[in-house]
Amino acid sequence: MKQKIHKFFRRGEVIGAFLILFVVFGLYSIKLMGTNPYVVTTMDIGTFTADGKLSHVGVFENNTLYGESAAMADYPLPITREIRMVYEYHSIPGLKMGNYTLRVKASYYVVKGTEEVLLWNETMFEERGVLKNGSFSSEYSLDLVALDNRSALISRELGLRRLRRRITITASVTGRGKLAGKTFGEDFVHTSTLMKDSNAGLYYFIDPEKTENRHFRETSTLRAKADVFGISSDVQNARSGTGLIALFAFLPLVGYLYAGRKSRDDMGKLRPYIVRGAPENVDRRVYLRDRNDLEKAFNLLDKPIMTYLDGDEEVYVIVDDGVAYEYRTPLPGAKRRAN
Image (tube, rainbow, N blue to C red; front, side, top):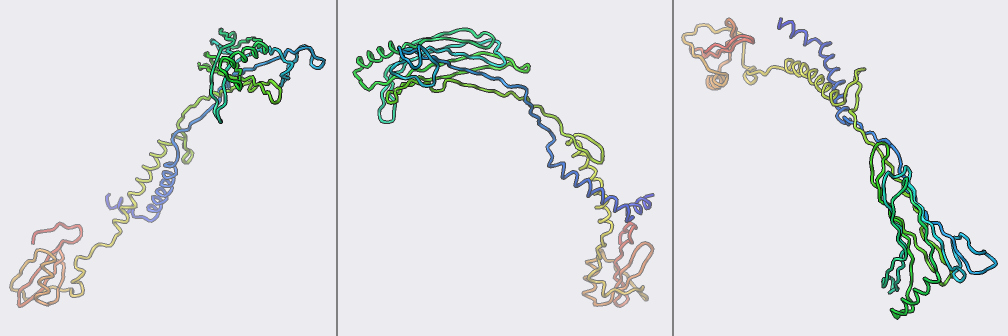
């Protein structure tokens, strides 16, 4: 049975089949080694929008051009006496709960080189409240005549003629909302500035509108799939399976190469001096332990080495004056016997 199995595995077509299996599954295994076993998918689940807007209308002294009031981007400084402001905030989807603060503040400063030096701050208006359906609206009228009088008073108090003034309108919203079943926090701050340009003779607002969009995404991680000859499985399992098959296909190839290698000739150096034949007229025999002893005897006696078969042993012998120096080695498959 062993001989039949050995003969089967030494057939050329069998070795070729194992070689093909090793190459194919080895390449699959190498390819899968560089494949990520997991697939990360990111999906947009919604967008939250927060929008703040400062609307304004100027109230003028008697004039024949603009009438009593008008909404403009720039207001002429000499005729504008009041600016009525409305701040509106709303969110989509509406925040479930939240609070807001609207504050109008006057800041007085001077410019030192390129640096602003703040000398005085005062709050002119402040309103706090609770959001309704994620929104709020607040109104305030800015009396520019009273504001100029206040600025003149502070300038005299400080003794500074070049004192400058800045009006800031700041809206702050904090709250919590829900989008696609997920709760999130909102922290919205919007600052708009009313500028007075004496050289141009105009009032105008900087950043009267602000919109923030927050995109919410959901990330999921799944096991990646691999298809090997129509069989689908996880990349990790496919990687292990193809590697094992390649390994099992490689083992018979190693055995074939090992079995097919040329056997080492222990008598390589002595082979040119070996002749076939059995000695005659031997009076005494001396048994050598190994090939090295045979080589030493050959070098000392300088006689040819005869070889013949004796049962399951191959005998190498050197005869000198009736003395036979023998080295016996078992034939392949035979058990070694002590000399």
